[in-house]
Length: 489
Image 1 (cartoon, helix red, strand yellow):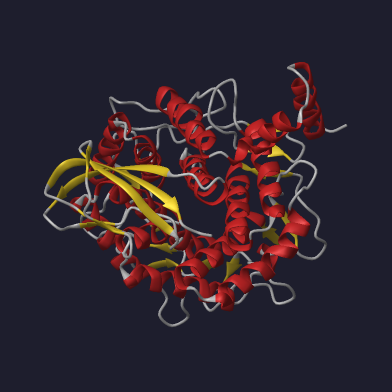
Image 2: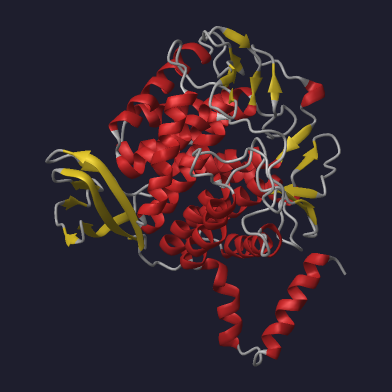
């Protein structure tokens, strides 16, 4: 019997030993993962708390870029601004969930460090790498790092409406669209030199996906700026036109500047990126009301689910080969997180119980095998049966970011869409003038209404559910607490 099945047997026997398996207790057990409070608590207690205790250095305002399972740093003291920004995202998210000042205090300090050390004041955009003292050592502008730098700052802006950060977000997006977007062939190129000339004009999957699932996904609901919706549409249309396998609709990974496929680098299908495409299409369906996006998402989802989802354990395989469908017998934390969040989104769009069942299986796999119950936070990689493969807490592409987003969105999705319970979000507005607008619904779902607003602990009635907006008073570091609820029938 494999380890995943053993885990389920253990849970079943535990229920019997604790007092039998009545229909009520069985229902309670099976619905645990569909409670928003579970995910909110995990994000705070099991993710951000151990990261703060074991990873954060308040004297230097830094985190080691590489840490093993027991949080021991390795491989030097470099800092990567694109990954530093993921910490900004995580601590901003922790504040959004709790309203606890300690988290935003850390985010504030990381933002200061990032702007002071990571921004290239001569040419613009973010250095790839800094040394332990904060001096740049890699001056290039890799798109992976650039896009996540903006995403981290975007979540901070969502929570604070900080004008200084807003300036860096806009400068970054403008420069990326001016210098990294290929006007002739479309799409973002891979790497810019320090002076923003093209260093590597090839096209990769991440630079096309990350803006849509990253900063654009949060900036549009929070600002209602049409530019951010237009860029999402531009990005997803390009992906569908240029990046899908000709023999079957899989997103592929590597292309020349003019979108000729690098065959030798593209036989392996990245499941996480394909989950991401389905998720993005569903989100655009809710944002635009265009049923074409929904239909395309469902068409892509079915073969992906059939090949990549392990129905016994609830794990999403990391990847598979295009020519044989042979699957890699492991998965990574971010792919499992995306699979879980997608299943909840599929439930919102289709109402099909199958997707809640898939979410429950995937969420249990996450809780049982990805969350480190001894040392805290999530592992990097596990086998499909749950056996640990790599327990690293941090690598160049791993921070608390995906685990915190997983906690945040599962909290929102399960409460709003599954249990039809309210959610509470917290904002600390850096400054506002009378009549400034806050859009607190950070999902794409139009069927969410504002139930209650508290400003500095006092009830505030100036909100408009037709527009989903709150009219703010004059505030300076003012606390706003908002309760939201789904109105979907």
